[in-house]
Image 1 (cartoon, one colour):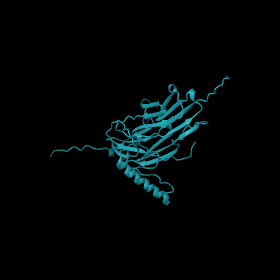
Image 2 (cartoon, helix red, strand yellow):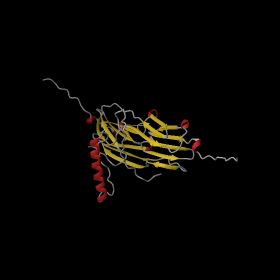
Image 3 (tube, chains in turn blue, orange):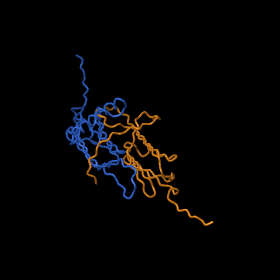
Image 4 (cartoon, chains in turn cyan, green):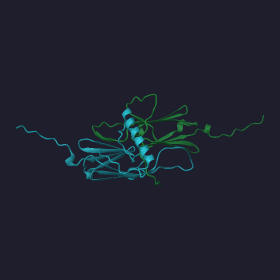
Length: 151
Length: 132
C-alpha cells in the first residue's frame, strides 16, 4: 500500500467518532467482499484516486466533475503527488431548490507513489470530468530485461 | 466562495430488479434540481461520460437519465482502487407537465445540465366564466 492518509479528522480520538469510523471500516470491508467495485483500502480525503501502472508509467485517475483544468493544481516532488483545488458550484438565485446533493469546497490530497517517477515528464489530461495523470517511471524503477549468456 | 473542505463520498450503486446488460457497475449520480418560473433544471455529476453518451427520456411523467462510460482497454496493474468506474442511471417522477419538444441538455466536463420547460398547461390559467 503506497497510499497514505495525509490527515486524520481533528476529532479522531473522541469515542463516538472512533466507533463510527470503525463501524464504517467494517461495512466497507464486507461490502467489498459482496460486490465488485472499489477495494476497502480507501481514504476519506477528497478526491478518491485510482492508481495503476504499466511497464513505463504510473497512472493516477480521479473524478472532478464540473471543474476546469485551470482550477486543479497538481505538483509532483520525488515520489509524492499533491492535488489541490476548489470546486465551485454555480448557485442560481431566485429559484426553488428541490435537491442539492452536489457539493462545493476546497480539497488537498497528498499521496506517495509506489515507485520513483521522472517529475519533469509528468503529463495530465482532463476529459469529461476525469483527471488522468501519467507519470513516467524513473529509469532505475523500470523493469530490465536480463540477458543470459551461455557458458 | 466556499470555505468548506470537501469530503470524499462513496459512489452508490443503483439497486434495481432489472439488471443492466452491460457488465459494469451502475452508479447513482449526485444531482441538484431547481425549479424556476418556467423550467425545471436538473444538474447531474457524471464524470467520465462524454456528450454523446447521455440518454434522456421523459415518459409518463418519469424522467430517466442515463450516462454510459467508455471503458479503456488497458494492461495496467492496479495498485489502489478507491472509486469504481461505471455507468450512471437515475429516475425521477415529475410533478409538473414538461414540454418534451423543448427539453435542452448540455454536457460539459462530466456535468449534465438538463432544462425541462414547463408546458403551458401547467402554468396557472385564468378561466373566464361566461354569464348564461
